Length: 192
Image 1 (cartoon, rainbow, N blue to C red):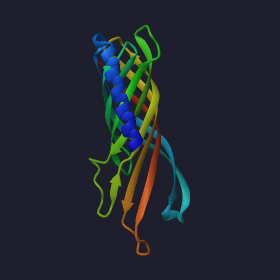
Image 2: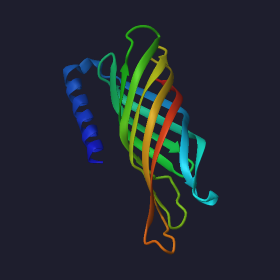
Image 3: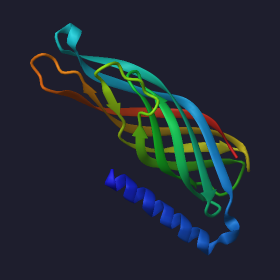
Image 4: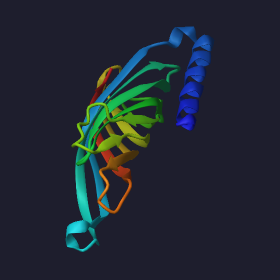
C-alpha cells in the first residue's frame, strides 16, 4: 500500500512539473472502455476430495481514464473501474499513463500503465464473510483509431489482489483466503 501511494504521489508531482514547463499543451483526455477479463484458474475442489481443478474464466470489466495531456505523446491521469469476478466485485482506482508509441496518422499504437488499489465498495458479502480488495497493476498496448476523438482497442495484463475472511470451521480459530486474479484484458472503448 505504501508503494502504491508513493507511485501515485510521484506521478502527481511529475504531472505538475511537466505542466509548469509546457502551460499551452494542457488538454483533458478521456478513455472509457469495457471488455472481458480472460484467465485460467487452478484451485482445490473440496467437493472432489481436494483434487486440483482447472477452469477457464471470463469476467466483465469497465473502466474510465481521465487525464491531462502533458505533451503530444504523454497523458497522465486517474483510472476508475469495476471488475466483476465470480466471487468478488472490485473497484480499482489507479494512477494511469498513456503514451503514444507512433507519431503520425489516424491509427496510433499506445502503451498503457495503471497501478493502484481496488476496493470492494459495491461487493455484498454473505454473513460471516469479509471481502477486501488489494493492489492492482495493469500494463498493456492499444490502438486508437481517429485523430482527436476515436475508438480504442486495448490488450492488457491485469493483476489484481484480494483477501476474503471466511467463517471458521469448528476446528479453526480463523480462516482466510488470499486471491490473485491474473487476467488478460481485452477492452473496446471511445477516446476524446
